[in-house]
Length: 122
Image (cartoon, rainbow, N blue to C red):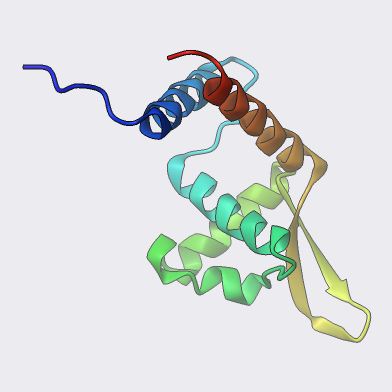
């Protein structure tokens, strides 16, 4: 039994998921697992909202894993040039996490694919 497809918004999102899955399978696609991607998205969203996260705040995202696991993921994301850390002039103790050009390009590509899925006929 088939269920009639959902709203055009649901269809657009499902098409976006198809495109994102296709991108992840490309040979030159960044190899991010679902957990790394979720952490990266959380960090970058905070940065986008003009509230960059510190490493301490990121490792306290308990819904995404234990502090030790999150610290390892942050380290991997930094080593693979998806994140970089910086200190503010007035407080050298806190390291803030911000996206790199590589991450912004990746998200830009996802945005283009999503716009394409939204504007193309279903």
